[in-house]
Amino acid sequence: MIILVGGEKGGSGKSCLAQNLAVYLQANHRDVLLLDADPQGTTTDWVKERDENSNVKNISSVQAAGNIRQVLIDLSKRYQDIIIDAGGQDSEALRSAMTIATHMLLPFRPKRRDLKTLVHVEKLIQLAKAVNPKIYTRAVITQCPTLPSQAQRILDAKEACESFDLVTLNNFTCNRNIYDDADENGLSVFEMPASDKAKQEIEEIAKEFLGEI
Image (cartoon, rainbow, N blue to C red; front, side, top):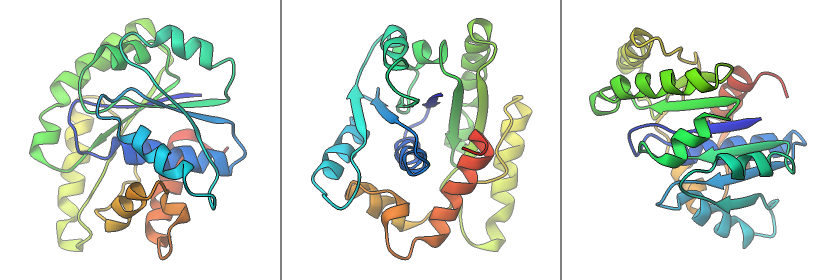
């Protein structure tokens, strides 16, 4: 699988999802590579932190920018799964990855400034499917409020995505400090204490998006 995590707005948790999905796949005995195509290098910094921790398994990673299509073709011969952290902007790396990715996951927070990007994201998906019609594309709502009284915001965000013909996963992530704590230490939520809820969120997203591994 070549799994692209990207979008038009920063801060929606793309790097977090890419990192946690990589650990999830590795734990399911997959040979995984993380490709950091985000100029901010968030995932690269995470991998460096992880490499210094002898208590967790290292995850192979590379950085790439610009037209990464050929890079992905070459790397796909060496790894079972590649997860691309494309960052929060329309870029050449994002567009070139869309031409070859098997899966594309687009995170959106249930906030107006995130959902306003749906107009442009819809056009990007149309371009991708013109050259890569088999790409499996889904949206996921992230950093959702945990209060039951705020549940309507999640439903409204899903409805907004669906209005642009972007199918949204039933599962979502909530706004939990443990995601940031894990990221800062080069860990996933699977390796953090007292992370049962976050771990369940990632597992359910992975199973719904990728199927049983």
